[in-house]
Amino acid sequence: MQKRAIPLVDLSKFTHGNAEERAAFVEALGEAFHTIGFVGVKNHGVPQSLIDRFYSESKAFFALPEDVKRRYEIEGLAGQRGFTSFGKEHAKQSEVADLKEFFQIGQEVKVDDALKDRYPDNVHVAENPDFTQTGIELYRAFEGAGSELLRAIAIHLDLGADYFDDKIEKGNSILRSIFYPPITREPASAIRAEQHEDINLITLLVGASAGGLQLFTKEGEWVDIVPGDDEIVINVGDMLQRLTNNYLKSTTHRVVNPPREDWHLPRLSIPFFLHPKSEMDLTILDKCVDEEHPAAYEPITAGDYLDERLREIGLKK
Ligand SMILES: O=C(O)CCC(=O)C(=O)O
Ligand SMILES: [Fe+2]
Image (cartoon, rainbow, N blue to C red; front, side, top):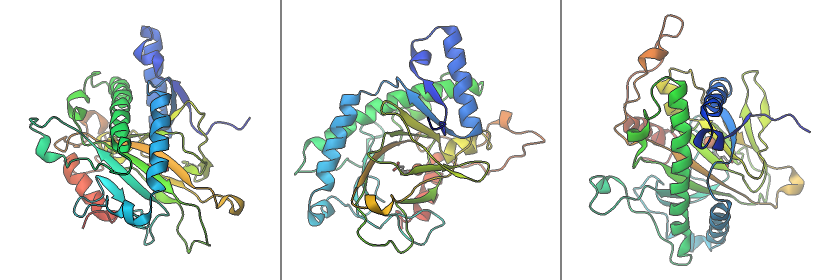
């Protein structure tokens, strides 16, 4: 058997385990986030049936004619809701766009909620009425799993389990359904997703429909991430790396093109980018600064940081 590129943890040991199992989970998660910034999680509580439903709704959406999909690409939203067509987004250091298109679903709050004005409405697809609704259900399930993981990491950082709770409640997370179409001719230079780091606190990624995801190790090697069917892949994003002054690692990753004989196969993947509310202060935690680790970042809020990054990747003008 191939050696696992990333460790595997069992979230039920944290949510339903005894004190010893919880402590072991916190230790294993902290170690994984500190050393490689990635971990596989099983027993994550996100129902497989819901994941399967959203996969098939997504497939049906991306199979719609291009002109129909474009009706759901809304000007002025920086791709944060609805469709973003092929060739728009590029990694921040890259001139060429990734070989992908995607659809994004954001936070839903009640009409009378104080945050209602802040979150643009989700985009509903007339040809595929259950797509967004299923996505919103999956969004909630990911929020649940993500908040447990952040509770564990808050304990690891000695901040108290509830440190992130109010910061992520009704947060600005994004569920992204990504479609990488079949490759029909030699790509000039782009790959499915050029190397990058995620912007948010943590990302939860359910098993993609094909391989290709790789992470860049400290030793300077690209290694394949091959999760089991029942696993979610979690990685640290730049916001959490920043808050912890690089103690937790936001590891570079990418999605490479398949070998030529598999060019006809599309790839579908569903990351959930867990973001806090925009007012969260990302100023480095005091406890993460010492003589050996001087402060590496200026204070900034999550909202301003996100804006800066969306400009760099070509989504915001
Ligand atoms: O498609 C994937 O498996 C990962 C995509 C990714 O890294 C991203 O969208 O940030
Ligand atoms: Fe990513």
